[in-house]
Length: 112
Image 1: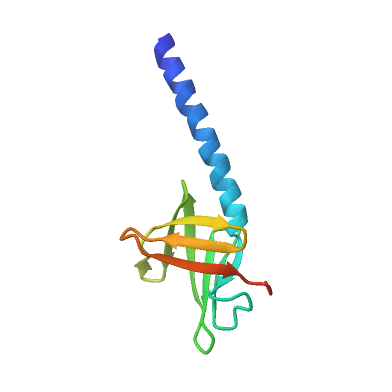
Image 2: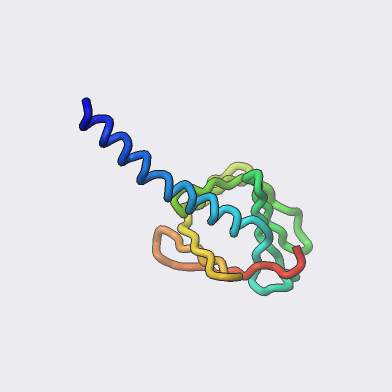
């Protein structure tokens, strides 16, 4: 019984840093990101409530939801679940790595 309790305690302890990291990562992710800082060519917005908005000038906004778990971002928009990406935020740069290894980069929009 002691071993089971010890194992459970170790598992929970190992999960706490991951949870804290996800919370910090989500806080850093919240806001708008684009190809350039003025985001005049469009943006990808992440809300604190898990909302997601793709803005492409001249077109209707696409709204959906996202979830973040162990730096894996999953997102859904109407009628589609997007490929999961691993995200890294370094200052004002967001790097999204797809399962096939290719990456997209975005910068934080200066006008939120």
